[in-house]
Length: 270
Image (tube, rainbow, N blue to C red; front, side, top):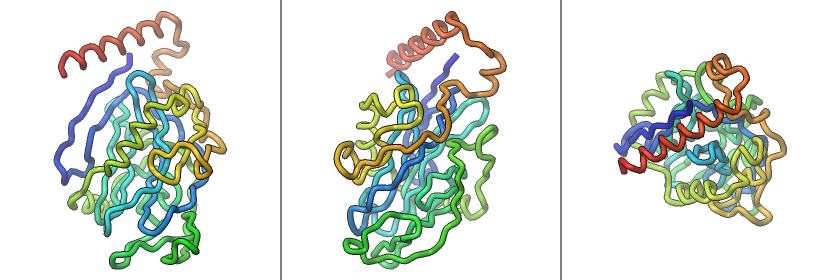
């Protein structure tokens, strides 16, 4: 039986800001895709991720460039498995990049910290070794080699990436943080309305994997996934597989009934 719960984290200084979703279904692996060229100075990369929709399941939120707050860096959100649930830990802006589950989002987000660029005074400098910038449009650049981790697992915890926050990352989690920008939230909402971005339709290989700007899902600067990280499986929790090695028609009908009932209860309490 699928279970969904909403966790409210409203304090602006919280390490995880926004709304957390927890489900019994693990996310597909991260797809393989190229990064669109940076639109111009001041844009920071926010990597793509799998979000959850109670009606359609997981859907891909394309990676995109956003105009970042001066002096701030983006800590991506991540899925973590604990207590029988996959829980979403929302991303946030802060003076340092904190813990994001050890997940390799690519383009400087290799699992720990961020190697794609850095603030120097009021200007952001880009590491050309890992991010796609045109030096004609962006002159604040440098090149520093980064070791690339090729894992595409999309969650932290048993069965996924067994990473834990370092003392430094724990210290960063106590710094003042800011919620995702309005452009980021609108970008995620637009993705949730696009059926081709749902894992059930794209099987872990979305046609819109990354965009140059938030919400721009068409045009020359849209990158499609070149491959899925692995075959997307909607029920990949080991306990689910052990208890129901061959889900039958009756079990599927019971699951759908439970989903509708849970949705009705949430609507009633709103």
